[in-house]
Image (tube, rainbow, N blue to C red):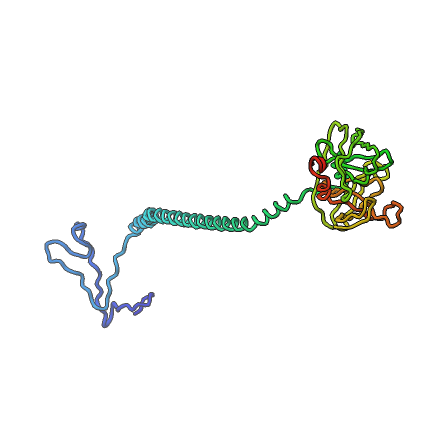
Amino acid sequence: MDDESGERTPPTSGAGARPRFSAPSPIAGAEGQGAPGRITGGGAQRRPATHRGFRAEPPTVPREQTDARQPVTEQTATLQPEQSAAGDQPAGRAAARTRTANSARWAAAAAGVAAVAIVVIALLAFRLGASDSDTASPAATSTAASTASSPTTLAAGDIYRFAVPSVVAITTSKGSLGTGFIVTDKGVIMTANHVVSDGGDIAVIFADGTKSTATVASGDKAADIAMLVPATLPEVVVPATLGGGVAVGSDVVAIGNQLALADSTTSGIVSGLDRTAKTDAGRLSGLIQFDAAVNPGSSGGPLLNNQGAVVGVVVSIADPGNDDSWSGIGFAVPIGGALVAAGDGPGGGPVL
């Protein structure tokens, strides 16, 4: 028959019933002398009979023993994580040291790469800078040379202030009127020859108002240039700065005693070079043509460039109507030719 658990139980009574054996109980007084289920004493030991088809029931463990074991199990389970953590601690420290060492190696490698990159960039920058410097050097040299060779350009007002201390007004006792300018530190005056060629007494007035008589040191009628030596000099003698050649289109300034208006200043440009003109002194050639306004009384005055240097001596104007009126064309002897005509020393004129 089947029990409640579904297992088949052999019959205990009736036909075919098999005897049921149970494990022998321990003999009183013999506790502790033998294992349970085993008879000890003077007789032979017997093993409990086991019949085929029957299973021995497991011994029943008292509840108190089961409860007594449970804390041990819990204690063991509790101690296992601690032991595991204690065992893992050296491994964790080793892993941390490994990570630190790896980080240090990576940092050192990165620092080395950065140092190499900085060196390469510095070398490239040095080479590029040297190349730029080599390329810029000719341009810088050219610019510096150009700046050094290009004097400062002055406005007309500045030219007037710079040059007027050297300018003098000239008159003669026969009514001639003209202009001149100081060319040496001894006060020698250059002027147009036709201004003083009438033979009258010569009088000069310096820029500071000093008045003096003068004598002709030399004169060249062909070039229309004369040199005068004054009897009295001003307290401060200011020689003019003598320049060189000019070009068509160059700015020029004329200062003179035109129409008896002392130190009249006009400006213009060079209109032409190597001109020939008919003047009171005769026919002159190699002249500078300019358009700065000049009039009677301007003859012998300086023609200045835009640095304030004398480039010519005014000698004539174009006068198609023969009325001594300004027509927009003036002529000047180049300063180089004027110096040649003035001579250089005794017999040929004053030392310049």
